[in-house]
Amino acid sequence: MIAHKTHDVLGRVGRFPRVDLIHRPTPLRKLERLTARLGGPEIYVKRDDLTGLAFGGNKSRKLEFIIRDMLEKRADVAITWGSLQSNWCMQTAAAARTFGIKSVLVLFKNYDLPPAVDGNLLLDVILGADIRIQKAEKGKVVKSAQAMSVLEEVAREARGQGHRPYLVPVGGSLVRGDMDKPLGAVSYVAAFAEIVDGMRAGGIEPDYVVHSTGSGGTQAGLVVGARALTDGCRVIGISVSDPKGPFAVDVLEIARATDEVLGLGLDVRSEDVVVFDEYLGEGYGVVDKGVAETIRLVFQTEGIVLDPVYTAKAMMGLIDLVKTGFFKKTDRIVFLHTGGTPALFPNREKIVDCLAEKS
Ligand SMILES: Cc1ncc(COP(=O)(O)O)c(C=O)c1O
Image (tube, rainbow, N blue to C red):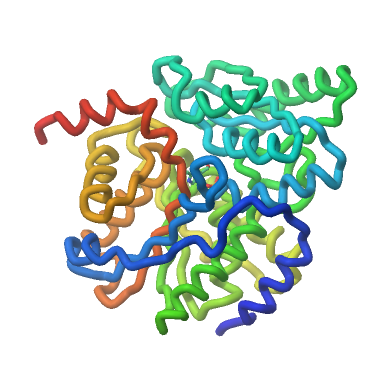
């Protein structure tokens, strides 16, 4: 049963103030050649890689609300963390900078890329972010609890220098640090409404939305949007970092908090959160042959560039689910392209090597 109309949901999201950072709606179109190649179901793409801020991506939608919260709290330094090539950190630094807010980025080196100033790290440097690189275990994402002692130290240092820091949780997802509402996920409820509107403009309904899931906010927002606005559209998160069990708990926590702040009364349940962790490969950020071949396939068939850490793994999952008969031939699937393309370049050698390998 459809619980809400789009304008009602957007009205509720609209009660949360935001700054303007992105072009909306982002494009939505059918991937005709990929659909034909796989022999159905119909695959569509929602291009959130084209949001417009600093190479685009899902984080710009979240940051519209989070930057506004920083401004209201009179913060002048954003402190956050991620991996060495974090899209989140770069997008935060870019968005904050345009509003006169400095950034301190704690970057955990959890994959063995050469230490070159390239990809997102190059953009962080150009933005003038204060970069603190920390060692971390290969293929593992550093969790809030692990990062907290370093972050609190950085916040103390900033306060000591007379600044007003704002500690932003990684990915703008879990309600932690100075973010007291699930602002990132709220932005993805609106994004889901955009997807549904786009599909309905063509007289069709989405059966599934498939996307890359990392810190959980995007999936939580989409799940709330799907529950509120459709009669059974399922959201499938392809995990790029965590095993599904504990990760789904995080997504559910954020989704319930989002339902609550929007007053939708959806009673989000664990069955609403579908996560696949079968496509993690050797772990977070580790590029393998499947990833490189997926990037090549989608670029050659559709002219769309995927990134090696998030969206290629999600697309690899989607293609495998098609091949293994998870979907019906008549299903309509929207693949959400969440951005991340700057990470293609620092991974150049690995990608070239994988594509040169004989199968
Ligand atoms: C390109 C890209 N796609 C997907 C994600 C996952 O989004 P979320 O952190 O909201 O789960 C991220 C960030 O983690 C990302 O940078």
